[in-house]
Image (tube, rainbow, N blue to C red; front, side, top):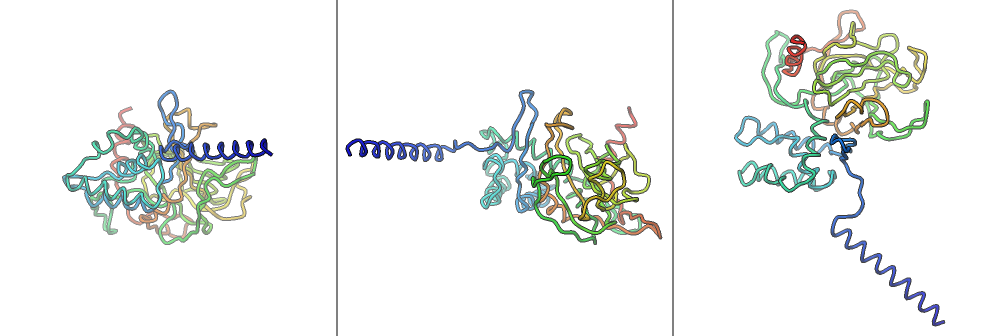
Length: 348
């Protein structure tokens, strides 16, 4: 009996100690947690969890646009990196409030982003990671507002939804779900379901790095951003007529251009086969901090669901080209990034 009581007392004491340790760890914020940003010994980022909410993207963008040209311009990526560093990459209910507080302090001259982030050890990592995802999406550009050929200079969102304006689609957050064709793996992209022939749009300006058949992606296009950090992947394009006419590897595309057409090709070693039941665009975004990450086990793909929701704000209007199967954008855009890249290429 006495021995039994001693055992029970020891068990209770051990449980109490474990509980106390848990409370201490929780209060000190030291509970083990998967890092949203990881780096290699060489210093470049090896993993990014892009968990930024649609609400945070929209709010940060609004602050950026409304303060452009003012004494205190709020950079939207800085704001997102601040919230990410403050909350360990968590963009829950309090994220937009943290952003609002920081933005108001900066706008009224009470504080600066540099001062607020001086003691945030992770700020530079989040700034680089989120900058890799969102860099090139907001800035100055010139666009036609009418079809008379005249251009208007603007500042704002110059990236586009991957689906053309006027063409509806459905989607949900399917990043990371299981796929089994070829081998068991995670789905590292975002599926957008629609109709065969829906015009697919270049999200950001860049150059065509890959085009052609892939047994998993079917007819696909890979477009690299000019800074080399983003690789946009558009897959399962239309059978027989997957791409914009004459599009080829090395071509420069401007954000908002039609680059191809939705289909359901893929899952076949034989070219031009519809082996996928559902018509959809597989849209993927790969981050590349070092060329060793381009292919293999070190690839970094991010969840694009909230990003595509955000990009819905800017959809490229298109029009049919005569009696052909082609579509083209209605209003042309001049992107300074394209002009700069083309000048650089000419000098080489």
